[in-house]
Image 1 (cartoon, rainbow, N blue to C red):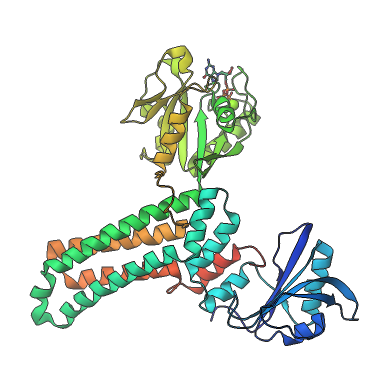
Image 2: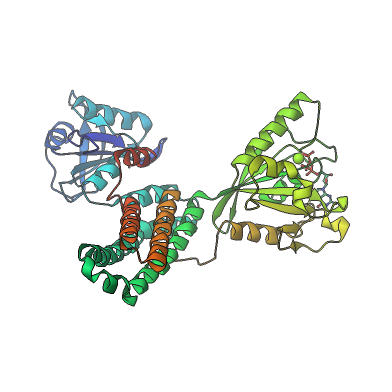
Length: 455
Ligand SMILES: Nc1nc2c(ncn2[C@@H]2O[C@H](COP(=O)(O)OP(=O)(O)OP(=O)(O)O)[C@@H](O)[C@H]2O)c(=O)[nH]1
Ligand SMILES: [Mg+2]
């Protein structure tokens, strides 16, 4: 098995820094020795008991509430002891050290959740939702994390897995009994069941995409020639004077980042140096950094001055982008700024090659721009029924969908049961990675190490 779950682990479960209460948590097979030494005797299970916490010399380190959860009725499924003392970093560190001296090991980040997973208390998606709840940056993100933590997402995925298995059984049977193959595979019930699977999977994928967006947000980089108003737009979006704005071309040199919450989606806007040929070493470096941001961002806003009258053909205006970043027009949007001077209407100007009119200085067309960016990232204001999913989940769901659709077309075009069977098998494996039924140790290590210590 992945972790060495024989050790007793210990960690401070509360946030670092001073607080009125601080919690030290232990998890292991047998905690009676720790209770004898630190508390002077074993506790009654699940009863909050006011106790002194003793050091090795029998001196009182702190006083507080101790609670003992014998295995398997605990968060980790092992025996767990919680010592709720005063929230000072020194006193908590002493308490942890006391447990280490008694034989416990400092827990790695996420190790309590990892043990809960390994002991079947939580599946992987639920364990991830615990971490997401702790880190949620908006009410929507927190709500969706609670739903996933309680297993709503996992149940939806499990129900998909069961449907895939049902179809697989049907298809595998047709392969094992080839004399009946024609009948099995041409049964409209089979195509119907696959179609249903595609629809159901598509629905879950949409909700997971929303959840991933709420959790991970997106990055939007603002680029364009000097003086077009990039920094003005950043200030307008943030609602504060965070970037220097002047009418001198080449004002911004460093990359400037600010988070803005758009309908609960955390969006990082990145202001960059104006792109132009220059001999200034500082500006050159600024432009190099701007390009690095363009390459990495989820969305790119290419800003032009609406008064320049060069038209709205982004391919002609900014060919360098297409040479460097490929030919896809999926990430880039043209924004015409200073429409207060040009007389363009705010909002969409051209729907084919996305172009929007704004005035950063006077705040015109900003709502249209942010709504457009959210839409581009796949946001829909469904509100409640979103799952706190991660990119990993979205990728697994999309892979499963691609496989099933491939299988569907194998069946329709060639009546091939073998190829369909293989596609379904891979799809099932993809889905099972979400809840952790088929996860490799590498993946588990990666997931749990991103958790906080004590969780
Ligand atoms: N009339 C008008 N002026 C604007 C608007 N937005 C920005 N400006 C002005 O345009 C000038 C340049 O604005 P900045 O925001 O500094 O432009 P920038 O693209 O960040 O420029 P660099 O940092 O030099 O690349 C300033 O004088 C702004 O006040 C707008 O919507 N309308
Ligand atoms: Mg600027």
